[in-house]
Image 1 (tube, rainbow, N blue to C red):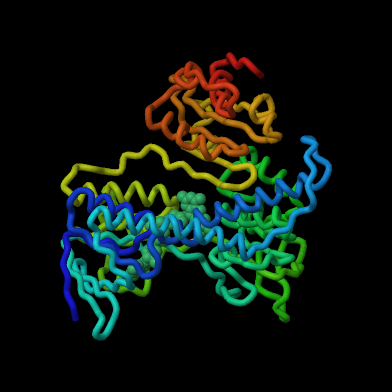
Image 2 (tube, rainbow, N blue to C red):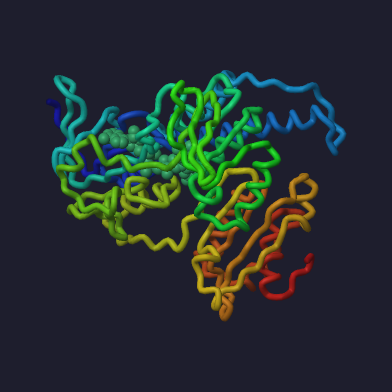
Length: 461
Ligand code: FAD
């Protein structure tokens, strides 16, 4: 068996692992990253990027389809069609460019990339492969960035008609009907895109609302749009399995059991950390439920072993994994770092989009916090883009005006997430936002108006 050694070994080249390895390389740390599949992990290959590419293609198609009928802009075009094989090829091209970029970044930073599945031997040793080609790597520090996988329903495993988000993002032929189990952000992002592409979509959600972690005010515009797109929602409904002939999804509700005939059943009921099958158990690391327990430096219970990203728990988001990855690299380089982020933005790329940064109304003491909300309905830019649904909502401390949370629902509001996060990280107050000149005409003016409203001096209300 060949042996190698390094100062830092990173298991997994997803957003957490590749950022950690790149930063470590930049800091002059002798680093190896091991990846079982493809650089970029879930996010670049089968997650964030391909889903946003599909959403973009669906939006473009729906836009042209809208022009084929009566429309306010007076545009007329023949009814469009879509060649999904071409669309998927384009999406794969976007993914390839980005994953190629990850490989280049690692190379530029002097990181050694090893293709293969790492199995942990002990807290300092990892083996890749078997037989003559096997490699043993000894490392001073190990970072576990093994990510997560889609949760499978035991009574309806993936295969055949039952698919995960991974397969849903690569369908080269559109189904006529799609049943989605799980009305969280992944199910709704893909479901909305499919509905825009002309697929008959039905969503089955066990909770009493879609996107159950958010309040009704925030999800209302998304629900309205799903209704307009003809998506059928079954709330407080539980998928029980496939019908005996396998052509339908059987669903239980308080009112009884019924079947939804579907070409595909997409299961998006959550993601589970990748902690099994690579020798992790032998290390006996402290766990936090099914996740690896970490402290504020991402250190595990074993000396010089760190864990980052989805394998360490919620929120399972790429930007959290990346921030943890960069921090751990700097810690290994000897810098004094600890997790000091006040907020991690969360975005649902639904239609309209939802951005959540900081505290939600349900998470603050209503006697101490003020909520000010301003709609896009009164915003010139939103109106001139034909989409004025949604709003910006600011939660602030009644006494000090300190911003506690900002949420928005609206077209393109994902691009406001940075501004919201910055406000909270910089300990901004309502006055700071209200006194900042926001360019006209932009949808961002609604953020300023919401702050002005919180101060009792909204201009365009
Ligand atoms: P991963 O990206 O899962 O990477 C882990 C890597 O480790 C994998 O490549 C895996 O092959 C490798 N690995 C595992 N075990 C081993 C081993 N033993 N040896 C070698 N390699 C190993 N997040 C967002 O922030 N924004 C979004 O818009 C968004 N959209 C999403 C859409 C979908 C459809 C999905 C599924 C996810 C989405 N996510 C989104 C979540 C995001 O993809 C994850 O939070 C992110 O990828 C986590 O990064 P990670 O580095 O922890 O793990």
